[in-house]
Image (cartoon, rainbow, N blue to C red; front, side):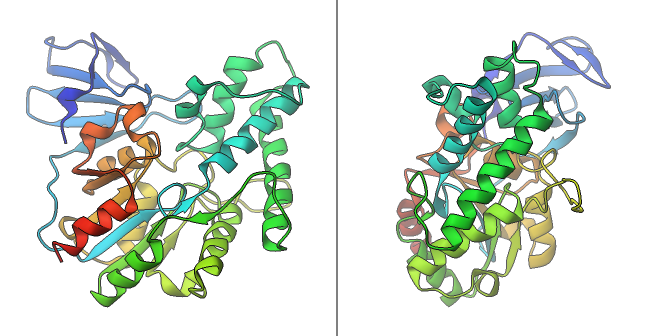
Length: 322
């Protein structure tokens, strides 16, 4: 992990700490990722912490340590969207559809520069980004209203998936060699965790659809741990973790580790999103980055312990070390 390859910042206002400037006081250096989703602060003591600036959640700071690829691999933690199942285009289409409805412009399209900001992070972060950029003149375009539209669209589309009806976009395709990799891990008695920043109502149908195509049975019985962001908060329904503290925060991965009961220095996490890599780094889990997502464009590639173009690339490497 090389934080010095990130973008050097001249200063950063850290809530709870105040204005930090490299070379002044105890602050040694400050670096940020290209997507501006994280800031790494290094101190003269040799310690480093990471924080995730947000207009929605509460500021949080996590200690960062230098991580090594484990000599013994006892568990592999895998992201869902983009890593295990190719579906990011589908979820970005949903965000685009919400924005179109908020604007009253049915033919609205996201721009290429929006892509790093509408994938890999929480739904609320995605929606707030679009509201701030496109909907400032729309008084009705609140985050609450946007979330209502989002969940209405998601519920409709997921019901179509579960009932075998066509969806607007091709959706929930298993990643190449996913089945071969999972069966290889089982054969080697390496525990497998599936960790998704998505809510349960979207994540479980997604992996079920992929497992159905692979003829692998019930994913909840296959994986050693499955962790999602929980249930949505809405009227008449009790919510759980929700959308403010999933990836890039570390808690979902740490929950999976708690269930798997293996040492952190015997675990690898696999992610194709910048937020996922940050989640692993904040959770002090060695990170494997995959191409195809926004790890490189978001600026998180230098934080990876390993990086491969795709899942088959990782699988080929893994077969040579276990």
